Length: 214
Image (cartoon, rainbow, N blue to C red):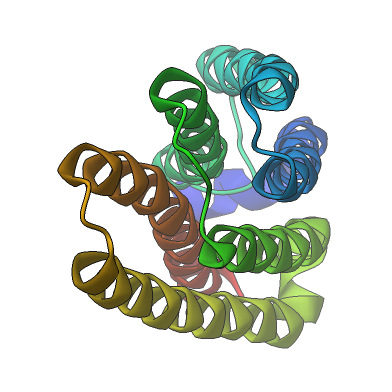
């Protein structure tokens, strides 16, 4: 009966534009993170953090809109739990970038390592793959193979980020003699690496949706 009802009652497409907006916020924030990694003097860091914080607030607003839409929509294009989890996953990517920028401002490390820029660029690559996947979500049945490809890209990016982060940690403990500076840099880089983890979680959520609906 529920299956028949789902076919007869039109599904609300309102979620797709909001999810696409969230994916676009990830793109904008990732660009700002690259800029921040290249201009990390304290004054510049403060300015970039303010811009990143604006994007984080925008993401929170879009997440709230998804929750409101879920509560007011009778028939959704996917399970409510899947839409909710996907929106939260997208928001997590934004939150980790914001958290990284905040730590750079608060801790004011002497100099960010080159690997910070490498991770920031990997996050941008992940942002592109996420955007491409979300763009195809409203035509899932016809484009599931493309979405799977973007999910595979996100998995590969996360593996690269793991390697960069592990190499950074090895070098950090070998070369950094200032224990306070060591802690600062480790926490900053950890948040960047978590952003790539969050991007891969988005891929896992999308794969779950594909299995259910493609």
